[in-house]
Image 1 (cartoon, rainbow, N blue to C red):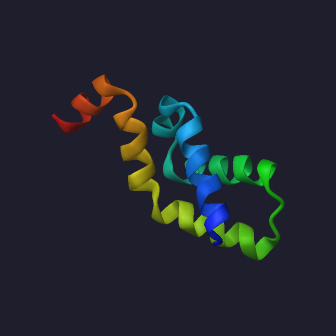
Image 2: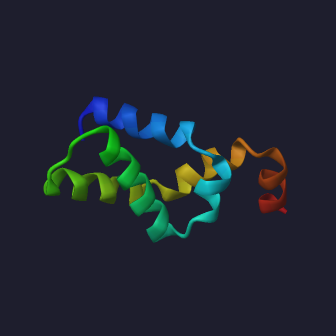
Length: 79
């Protein structure tokens, strides 16, 4: 992935509702983020696969970041 693609993806994660990112199961989260990313940038099949694998590998981080934006949920998850 290019640095620009990485910035776009993480911007997308930050701009979307934390509750949505936390409530989707892993497969749905990957597909949803990939769909949103593809709406912003045209990807060929190889690039889409690469982005999908990258998202999959970053699911714990994505959920942690989303959880930090919802303080009461972050507390309940740590108890």
